Image (cartoon, rainbow, N blue to C red):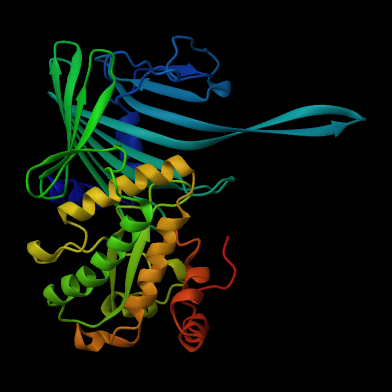
Length: 399
């Protein structure tokens, strides 16, 4: 499944004009709305309403925020989304509102029996010369009018792709279970829904245990104790995992990535910067933004027994910490742990662990790399940071 959708993404990248022309040639009528959406393909469970869905439509295409194209069989095959920009200007001393409307994104939808594919494009920048760029490919399988499986491969600028895969189990009109699967098709999350749409979420651990997420700390366990335990476990497991992977070509970095802006920091991800990729970027002849050198897919080729984060006790500690830190409304202790961990990992002699370049370094940063420079100041030596900056791999000031 993963390889199939990844291949499909590679097929549609750069084919915006052709996909648009083919889809819109089959449109026989359009519907429009100003506030709220008239249609959405995402599954919805009982007791939950989409407050952005509306039945009110407009017949003025020029004022629409959403436009829906239907084929001859009455199916939505195209959705356009417009951004509305309002500014106030003074004319003759009187304030007047000026509205500008720009195409923000388009969905092109195809159907084969009980299968639906949605190709999502979004504007890469605003203005007259804005260009539509592939955002995601979403695939859905239906049964009796209900979504029973959904798969998505999502692209973010400056970030590694995100893969999502969910299975849904229904009893009549009621959604009872859903399972999230990884790239190999293994379930790692289970949601159990009640009659009102409420749910309990369980993480499926390596042992097969279904561990309920969002629970309070066990009696006698403190956040400080857990942070210390997580630090010690990761300090041991990360070098072992990299060594066991038997990487043959040189690598120039390890990147510990985490969610930011109030999101749960744990589970972090570990990616590896291969020197061959860096050289390809440097030799392409194109001017590359600095963050491309630190943005890599999550590394998956570990020995099953020593994957750095796939440890049952570690996964439990991650969730307890996320739950407690959310209550305190501060994820900084978790971020500090990963920075401190990177400091200690940076001090190791990695040449004895794997094949590294002379400027190899360990990085801990938000997924969007917005805090990379500030974190590197804490992690690497001044000399190494200056060299990275001189080479254009980092910038002192970031947006």
